[in-house]
Length: 624
Image (tube, rainbow, N blue to C red; front, side, top):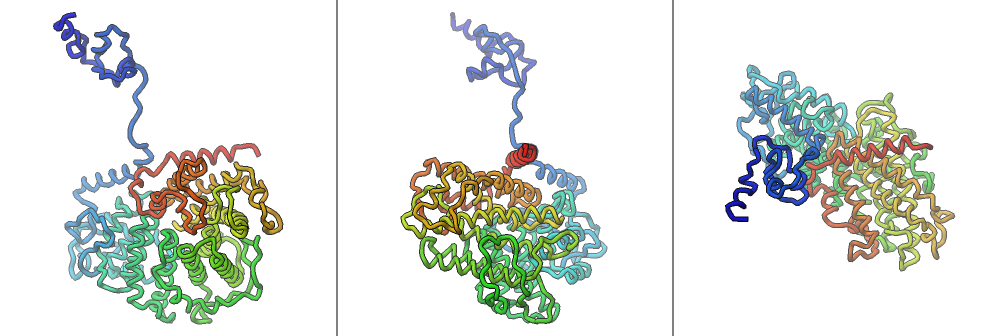
């Protein structure tokens, strides 16, 4: 065939019409993976080689799932409405503001200024007279302060953090005396609890934007109780977002401000002094929770809080609690540890005591070696402190119901969850990778038996408490509950593989039976169902908090890495007894669990949620 003939018969010079094109390459070109000009009735290649040219199927839709883009779509809708009205979502009282705040320690200049009243909506271009919003300014609906403040005090206040006084805050907001930084921080927290973020009270402004505005208006050199409260609110907001790096940095600033203000020495008399003392207690509780989550040292000395709880640290006359009593709390007279004996019983003081025990457990995990005799004694000291706490608190042991509603109703639940969390945290590092994993020391083998049984019982108790609370009250659960569920799921993940091994008697080889008998084979049978239940609980929380959605992703990654360990695909693994549980896995997984790598938040998954709910439906429809 001549060159001229080949050129005339090439796909580019094909006489076939090219006006009507298909939606995708023809099937022969797809199979051969060659370029197709998609001409009809036959493409140039098929016309050249005299093949049958046909099209079949519909091209797959590419890109992210629609569910993953729902929040972004809502934001875009809101921004389009703002553009139509020639308004932009800049913070009220400013004309120009940079939209990027890469580092949380970067603050704007100037002192926190009073914010406008919630009774009149705030315009993003409002003018100021004497640091207040001008009353005659043309207002818009950029911020619905009334709605977000109501959401905050309804769903977050004393749940469990007691940061603001409701009456004082509402009065200052009404009188235009509430600092802008505090209002923006309230909005950042409340936006997460809004039923429809982007179209609810937040008026198209995200929690991240509110947090950036609050950071901009806080002067770290201007030490005040208002700034300390705003920083604590930002810590809570970033923790709910799953951003551990920002939460820990801002927490360090809040702790430093609390120490500078000497809140630890404030007497509990008078409204202002009582508020300062509660802010200090909340700062201590938040410091303990965040430090435990991030596996970082505590930023506050426990001796500062021991003076407030010293009278309740006395040994209980009832002695040690029973080893099987993990859910109920023994009844006994309440031992007061408030400053004034005439002051009414306050649930947050019980939580302060429990946070102090959690702080000791976190220090033990950071500084101790699991296999030493000193670590064994330290674990028993922590367990003894838990028994003293359980025998010294109030007489009520039931989860609060809706009839007992109001601020603080979830604090008893949080206290009991922390009890089970401490047991899981201090016993989880001793869990063997396999039931028949050898141990060189008989005593350590006995500790493995004890830790395995205790950790699984308390992981089950966490899920039972969360399920019971969800059935008996409509009060939303705080983000810290997601960390408790995640910790329980990491323990239950081991039980799934223990049950598949079916070698429970290996735990009792050359070991005196623990608690009268070795762990039976049926002990781990329910681990798979409980693990699915924990995923379901996190899925429910993920509708409100980004951190819960991140925990779902982390559990999926941890399960994959655990299977790789069991299959021997990870080289260099040696059975060690380290209190750093996540040292068994990749360092990248630990950083993502702690929220120091948040670049994958955009792919938080509706597929996982669909799998969880499908598994839940399957288990519920299974014959019993």
